[in-house]
Image 1: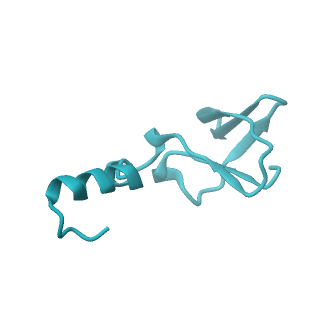
Image 2: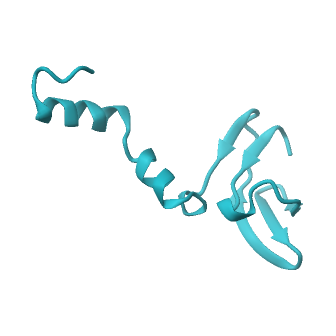
Length: 82
């Protein structure tokens, strides 16, 4: 698929699924049930991830951006290493 990866609910990772492509959309099916849909991207070697497809712990971890870590360190005190 154009060397681009698209997410599915984490419970279905590494399972064989069916994909339907259009010029604008990637749809992923398990049997006749659509389990994911993403806008199609032609960026090679990149990922498109729906946060709802991630386990809760991964969603929480993803919220800790470099800016958020720096702000947390500043509030914690001057001895907090960055």
